[in-house]
Amino acid sequence: MTLVLIVYGYAHGGADPAILWQPFEVLVILGCGVCAFVVGTNLATMKLLGKTLVAGMFKSTKKADYLELISCMYELLIKMKKEGIKGIEAEIEDPANGKVFTKYPKLMKDTATVTFIVDYFRMLTTGKLDSHELEHLIDTEMRANSKENNAAATALAKLGDGLPAFGIVAAVTGVVQVMSSVGQVSNAELGLMIGRALVGTFVGILLAYGFAAPLSSIVEAKFAEGIKKQECVKTILLASLHGYSAMVAVEFGRKVLFNAVRPKFDELESLMKDAGGGGGNNVVAMKK
Image (cartoon, rainbow, N blue to C red; front, side, top):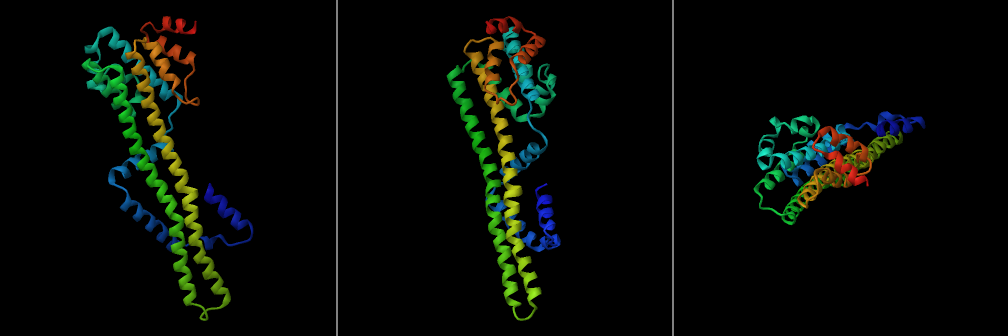
């Protein structure tokens, strides 16, 4: 849409938009940008960035996704309370074939969050971690995840920052060619050559602020969604370890979510009643 509006605005003034299409200058700008990006970014970061970029553009985390997450955590806590540690061993060892996780197909597609949940429930089964140790461990992992995520988002942002400079490089090479043609071509042809050379600066700025910057924002938002899910899991687990019931623990987890995707209390109440486990009594107590 950005490109369409720019071309339309340019053509609306009576200019020929065809002059904006300079494939060799685009090749120089993108080629230099991609090469610099590859040299300055490791393979793992590039894979993470690509995967997150695709997910961010086509899959946004909605309220229903968080409801599945909270409901799954609730069922796991209830199952552990009723059946003990052995009751959830099958779930955490093989989530894909467990009775709880398979109820939540959207959550199962988020392998990072499922792994996060399974890892810390597995630690709970050891019976050796208290709430402070678990909180410190989770915080450490979340900081590591954030650092990894920031490296990927920063790599894309730096690519965007460099594109205007590469646009100048392309423009300068065009101007050099123009200078070598002075006196050999007419003024009209000379003006056209200068216009074509300046397209490089235009393309570099357009790619930086019209494409790279928005894509970088999408990646950052997607990473933030993943960290928020981990924060929700952490809050629920810690509340449970502090002695709160499963219903109250998931209410703690609901509170850390962003307003736009935070389930309402009544939605959570209905969900917990459907899941069973006696959550309704706790809900009444909380309302009072």
